[in-house]
Image (cartoon, rainbow, N blue to C red):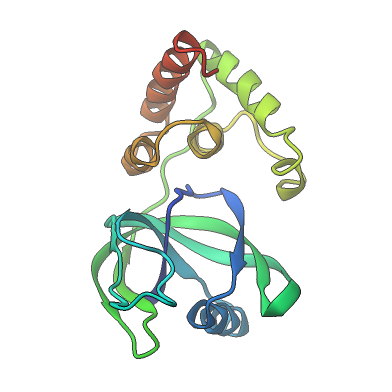
Length: 202
């Protein structure tokens, strides 16, 4: 177990996933500076209710968050206008939040338990169409620069990235994050893709 800073967000990121975040609140600017200086990371957890940004809100009440999230590290950064920081993060491990609290600067802290990595397997041939779909999605100009190379034979990798990029609800994505078997995640994703195609969304 470890006590680490938590970043409540409205997105889900699975191990191996990368994303860019714009950081402008002082508590998060300080957090990013600290984890980069100490070569460590922070926990990313999805908001179940409440608000991510507290500045300007009278109550300053922390949002409610899901208990399962990802431990992420900053792998790149650049400075933006007005003191804003643009960071690229990569998820390393899933983690379970046992409890959380607010630090003096209103940064959410959490006592977390790191979960063992999923046992990766090759993508079965019956899910080759999911690999084709992911290859198409990863050519998007906002995604392609995040990955110099990618293993499209990895069930963990393919399932993780499809979870992040498919246009389905964050609640559904949270459920996919919580699965421990990469092949079961592919089964669920195959069903989701079928439903999206049937509704004209894929």
